[in-house]
Amino acid sequence: MKFLLPFLFSILFFSAADGRQSSDSLLTVLKAEILKKDSYDREKEYQLKKLKAALTAIPKNDISARYAILGNLINAYRSYSFDSAHVYTYQLMQVSSLLKDRQKLNESKITLGALQLSWGMYKEAFDCITQLNANALPDSSKLRFYELKARALIELASYNTNRFYSPGNRAESIKTLDSAVLLSKAGTYDKYKYMGQLFSISGQKEKALAILKQLINKKGLTIHQRAMVAIDLSYLVSDEEKEKLLLMAAISDIRSSTKQTLAISNLGTMLLNRGELDNAELLLNEAVAQAAFFGNKIQEKNIATTLTQLAAQKLIRSENKKINTLIVLISVVTIGLIGIGIISYIVYGRLKKVKIREAIVQEKYQYLDQINKRLLEDGHIKEEYLGYFFHLISDYISRLEKVKRNTEHKLKIKNYEGLMQLAKEIDIKKEREDLFHTFDTIFLKLFPNFIQAFNALLKPEDQIWPKSGEILNTSLRIFALMRLGIRDTQTIANILESTLSTVYTYKNRIKTKALFHGEDFDNKIMEIKFVDVSEPGSNPISHK
Image (tube, rainbow, N blue to C red; front, side, top):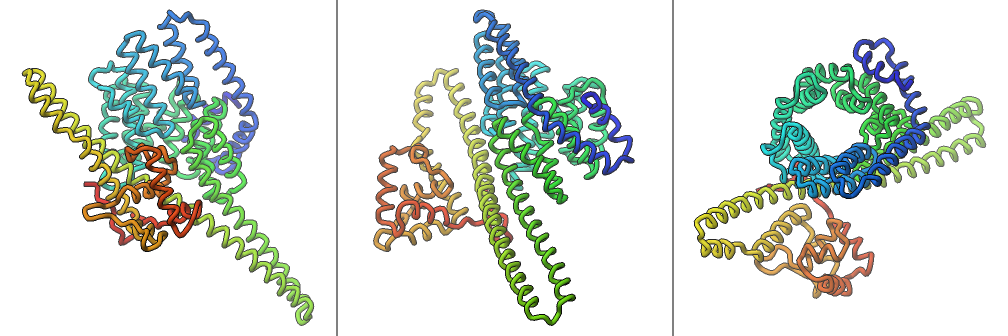
């Protein structure tokens, strides 16, 4: 079966006669491969052990050899363990610096950015991108740079659904992919892959489908490459073909010990939506185990949310089966023993139990609904602040560029008085005040009733209201940060540019006067309502 998978990939789009039976057979293979995953992981660990031993054996002064082995280690860990890959990538950057090779250092930064992006570290990944100049890179490095930048922009466009930012991110990713297509060689894996991604993101589904079908049947692809192409194709085909592609990709990932994978989680979600709860649970549990092993906390939480929905459906299905069984029993008893008071009494008692069970199920469902609403709320808050973050960063970059040009000009003409004047124009205090003003404005648009709700927790004589010209004051700002989920006092002190003792003093002074004490007061702060910006009739925050 190990060598049969590429053949199945090649015949997937030439035969649809096997239908449901083919998918069931592949699912059986996948379940068997999951049971054998430990043996694949042991083989992977053995290969990694040999690479690490080779690295240890290299003399410290043989920097070039260390660079080559580190590259192999990173490739081996890239889809296996984020932490290890991250550590060796930083070592690679150090070795590149020792070599004083600008090209190798740039390659190391691209490797780091791609790794950070796979974990969801979007800010760090974009920091790597902004440090690199595509025009100064050789063609081989440019391809990797364009791929990294395009992936980052595509994921940002998918995450940031705001209509002001998402189209711009998508347009920039199309432009970047177009550059990658032009630069890649005809007939290569990269050429097909970038063309497929370009057609897909630009809405040309049929062209993307044709290109990716050619690629998946192309000779010479590795098992991991075929799995990645299969995942890309799964977003473009019908449910039956989609399931087969995800099954084959998931089997490939198990055999190659790939832990950073979408195939098995997407497949589990697909089966959940179709009502195959047992198979979905098996695959989603494996997916969350892979995400935990790799170290991707974001993916792990997303899959855990899906597992929560699955648990709710299993509970509802179980109770429905009990209810259906009970209804049949009641019908038989009613027909056979109608008129008998004792039997009627028994039936009545059982129906009462059914209602109690229904109430329990409804209560649990409402609890799950509250969890989902809280997750949606957190998502909206992150979405709004992410949009503001990128807007603010863009503004600071523009201003920094202007200062840089002025500085270079004045240095060229030796206008040192002008430089002093330029330095005086930078008002750090005002920048901090502007930052607080921006935070206060955004926060109150997300939580417009925060000040009133906060003061309702205090006695009238102890209530805290902003003075004229203020939006929030220091006390209110501390608890606003707590409402956003920032509970660490040191972090709050750093954000407010204050000391730890000062923040403690503010918090304790207010808590001692509050109507609620200790954890009860903190819980009341977290219960202050959030305005859902996606609800009809609400006013979305304007990014200006």
